[in-house]
Length: 108
Image (tube, rainbow, N blue to C red; front, side):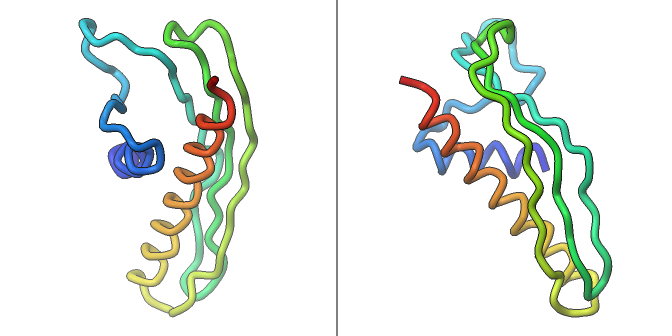
């Protein structure tokens, strides 16, 4: 999930400069995005939910720029695991897009 979100953030922000924690000490970090996933589950043929919070902070992680709660859901559709996983992937993509929009809207 972490790598998928990083790749999607790169696309959403138009940059390849997204690092996953723990990043190398020599790498200069301008901003941090912390994610706390509180719920990520679903049922076959039922609802899939991804919920939690994210915080955008300065490079040192000391000053918070924005904090947002999120709760995303959608129906898994079919009644097999591939449908459940596909719905989960779509929710991760939606979350990544929302996070990228928050970065663009919060940073001058």
